[in-house]
Length: 234
Image (tube, rainbow, N blue to C red):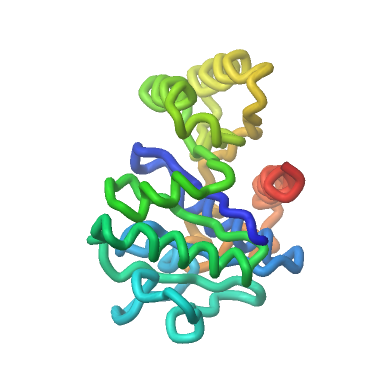
């Protein structure tokens, strides 16, 4: 059965979609069957991978078959679009069935969990196997993650990923504070992923961090390699 991994932070602008696409593609490069989903109708992860959802049947209608819904993105990597943010409570059982079917077909289901409140997000957080939280190293983000750990969904947090990090004294201080906070908690704090012009350029081209030969990308690729290894072995 496949593993559901949710990339979540209720705060926008922390790079959830970038993290999601890179983790999903990295897993697929290791010969895993991977499904990627964004939990709202913007389908940002799909856009960052160089494709668009023109409308039509999306995840809401995927109950028994995947053939008329999935979009093949890369070898071993499929995307399932969401066509509406409106999910009534009566759809909860159907949504759970969707994910049960996906788990039979894929090794990993990566969910780019948008900062919106809808039934789909509620169900995902209920059934996900683990949560990865990308954050910025600033006052609001670090305060938010410490609060989140104490909530019910905090029990599923396996990893915190500082993202879009700048080489400043303040960023270093917040990272040190988080290292101390998470010590002994069982939550892995990854190496900071730096803010990078390479990543920006790749996003414009619809590519992932693993689709460049730039030497500047190597340190970022290594950080993602560590993150992906922990997803597999965690």
